[in-house]
Length: 142
Length: 166
Image (tube, rainbow over all chains, first blue to last red; front, side, top):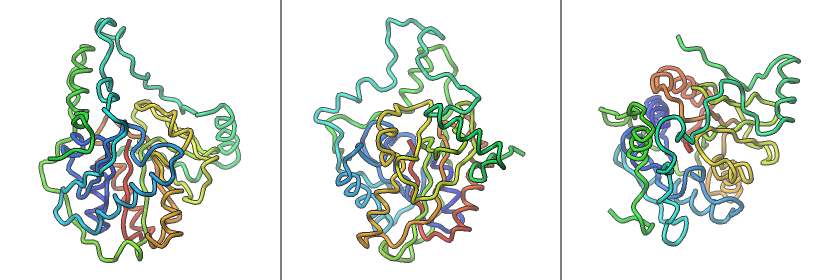
């Protein structure tokens, strides 16, 4: 996403990149970032906590008005849980699983659409059959 | 540097290296920008600004084609007034449980609509753009997807852009 931020900013639109992966963000170096130290999949908050979601997003958006140096990162003062035990397990394969493909617990890279529900698949196929999906944009690689 | 948590942030670059190494795969080359980022000055207060949203959590709307997991660099156009009940999440690289239960954790349209209603934010663009991150080829992102999304935001005449990766 940092590459996209740099492209958009280069067209004259100020960007703010939320992030929960500080090392990746520092490596790509987007113009402005707000770091939230939560597990991946929660870049803008915890589920069903609208007051928290509002508070942290409002804090993040202040970065537009306060960050003045390209590449600056605002660190948001929120903690996922006391003790942060979740950090011990992220991307740490089970050592007893051996090595190579047998130990690879990552999701296979399917090349067909991965629908959340079967009903979604039917709806998409109906849409495609009756004129296509105008809001689905498939880019070609020149 | 002070950190809010009791443990330092997870270094995802290092953990990816460790994971790939343990699996016997070659090292993944993360993007390292050699040049400083561009800089566009903010010209209006937040309360008068129109915000565009781009999110990479694999969000689509029921009725749209879902993302696939093998270097999918397509994007979806999503009306920012779409109710949460019609938003879906699909992605190979993160636990989708919470995003499917409450899309605001990776696609904060309801939160942003609330900030507009409060007057904290001027307006939210009618269109958001979503894709599925974890695209292995940074060249495709840099040369194809990024310019396409930037074109859309320029056409939408947004004052600011919020980017929400996962």
